[in-house]
Image (cartoon, rainbow, N blue to C red; front, top):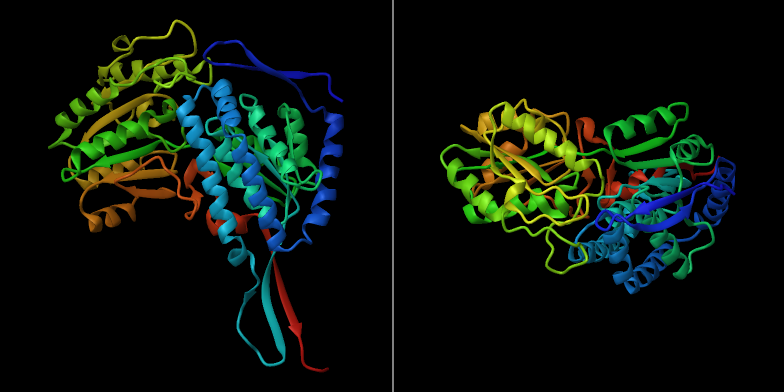
Length: 464
């Protein structure tokens, strides 16, 4: 066994949350072999048995709701009310995937030819390695773990070094639900050991959520193998507030989309384009709503914005703001307007109006409670600026005109397009993206099918 360990630090108290042993290079074969042994039995179970296990898992997971929420908050700083919401949302996603599993995974007939039977079978891939991120540590994991088990696979969860207890939350509750030994495992590992897992011949699919740089590393690690790699790598998601938007609703929605979870969301609103005829009023109302946030202990019920999960993040965000202001942006909400806690890795909300399109705040992913607001003169300019990004995860429009929303949405380079909502995931729809946001999909029937291998069954049935 490895003698190295990982210490997790609470971003509010800056005290150690836990210290966990890390997997050593010599342990990789053992973990994969356990997963493969479980898979070889599990792949032969019928869909009813898989649904039964995942339903039992839901009950076990729900029973530790408060424990899971507190673990999330202590590890990455999410306010406890939001963490409880994440646990409940995790169950909702699982519930939907269980509901659609039988229909999605059934054999597909392709039409009759006399003397032949032909159909397409969706077989499990084998061992799925899920490399999960810290910002929504339960959401991101469940997007892969439950669909993988439903599809007949075994799963190894390698969670972020910031939130490793969330991997254990899945493995322990699957064990309580009666999962075969090794079917759902969690590991704590460094980059070298994770790379060894990606390269291991016994791993058949890799799902990674994280940075673009991390995505490139995963792809390079898998380059010598013909396996699928699913990547969700972030975003710089735009919102377009039209002159006919439901004004107060749009302000509330965009503020929440920008600052929920302290802006640490791949699909957070990170740049807002507002029609010039309502621009000044929107900036004023947005700023007033932003000033309502309360920074503090994320375990306190009245805290609405917790610390950032990375100690270096506040400095990075401050540099983005300084660059925007230097190049003509106007800081309309600044840190000085908030009561700052005397400890923790905090960055108060910042709102920059008139930020230039080419500044860092508009072009770089922020992943924090900062936002750029820019005026536009009509749909054409809005579409051009919304598409001016290396990312394409989600985008939103705020308007009363459905036909206009559809027309604009069809021109936006994005995985999900919203009208009058943002920063939300519907498990019935594929979570996917374009450009540097990555490739593949999770959730929906497409997320399930991504975790299967196609097999064509072509049978001559008449006598020969």
